[in-house]
Length: 265
Ligand code: SAH
Picture: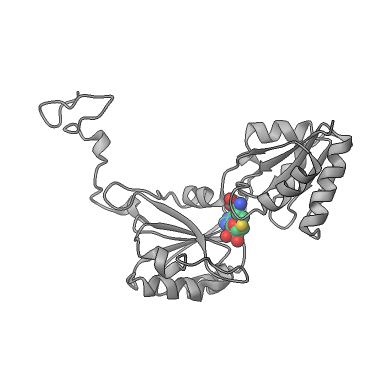
């Protein structure tokens, strides 16, 4: 019986943002394949002595599949460490299919996505009552084509929060999409470079009008999350629409509204 291959979300960069489950799997892994270009190598710091550790940076998908299958023949626990969460832009299914074909059991452990780490870094909320209640994870078209209906201009028409991955070198396309969807020139845009990486995280705030220049001035050309959202900067708003769930006049399943507004129920 082959061992199990665990696809583990390594989190956005700070090794402490690995889950306890991910860390425990690493600690008993016979082999670890990590995404060298993105995953902080420190994530492998809990690996046991003698663990086979390889960097997938120069491997094709086929080679990755073969390496994992071969390791699963020898070890009970094999870990494929991926940046952020494995379900986002992570070639998960391509490698899973290779393991399925070889009859190797597998499981996925979620991780903290860089989208969430970027919101945390900047103390922002993706949702606010009466502002937006939806988040779109997307990218702009580079070498990977966007499916019909998913151009940034189309998605941005929703005026919800947009977390734009893999697009920092294509900021001109991001700007174009937002403008086409009617976002104003002073719409706030946030860029977080290396969110959560100890000592390396950088936060750039700007507007649709100047974010490209600000990123250029800061020299940010890789590993960055672009966030466009009507919620950005809400920390400084004098008036915040209160969530209806906490409004004393609003009844819901767990709490009956008080008859006198403002009194605890
Ligand atoms: N699965 C990953 C995303 C992989 S795609 C996740 O859930 O985060 C790689 C893209 O993720 C990068 O181009 C960048 O847009 C973003 N990214 C990854 N790590 C990041 C970090 N620490 N800070 C900001 N953006 C990051």
